[in-house]
Length: 264
Image (cartoon, rainbow, N blue to C red):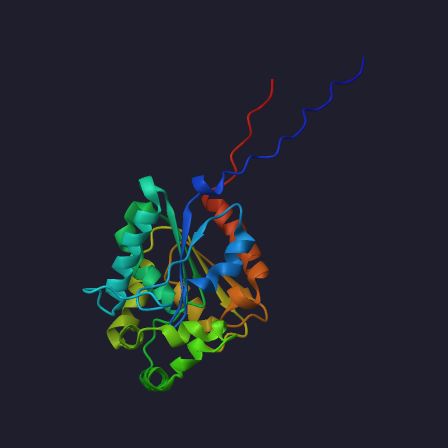
C-alpha cells in the first residue's frame, strides 16, 4: 500500500496594498514629494506611498496660520495623514533628513493610527553650536542668492525643488530645526515612540553620518538599524532597489501575509 503523499504547501496570501498601512513619506529640506517616486515604484504593488509636497515646498503654498516650525508642520502632517488614510487605516510615517524630525512631531498626534516609523538619514539629538550656526548661515545665503530664473530653463527640472521652495518656510524650518531646544527635544520624541521603527543610514553619508543616526535610534525601544554600504544622503535616488529590499521585509512584519484558505 503506497504511503499517502504529504499535502502540498500553500503559499501565504499577501494583503493587497489597500488593506495594508499607508506609507506617508516626508521629504527633507528644499526637496519635494517627487523624491520618493523611485522608491514607490520599487515597493509597488504591495505597498502604497503617499508623498505630499510639504507646504512651502515643491511649489505648494503655505497656508495662512501654519507656522514655519517643526511642531506646526508635524501637526499638519498628522492631520493630512488622517485624511488620506480614510476610515482609520493604519499609517507608517517615513521621513528623510529634516522630514524625519517632522515624523517624530507627527507620531504623537497620530496616536493609535500609527503602525510604524521608517527614518532615512535621520539622526542627531546632540547640539553643536558652531556647525549648526554655519549650516544656518549657509542656508540663508543660498535662499537669498539661488538663481530662480533656472526654473524656466528647459532641462532643469531636477533643480526645481530647491528653486521653488518658499523662502520664509525654508528659512524658518531650518532655523527652528537647528535651535538648541529643538535638537535636545529629539531624543525624548524618539523615546516616546510606541511602535516599531526602522532607521537607515548610508555609510558614505556626509550630511548625516551613521554615528548620528545610531545615536538617535538608540532612544527608541523597538528599533532596527541598517547601514547601506556605499550609500550617501539620498539612497531613494541612487539606490532605490537596495533601499526597497531593506525596507520591505521590515514592513512585512507590520502587515504579515495571511494564510490562504486550506482546500478540503
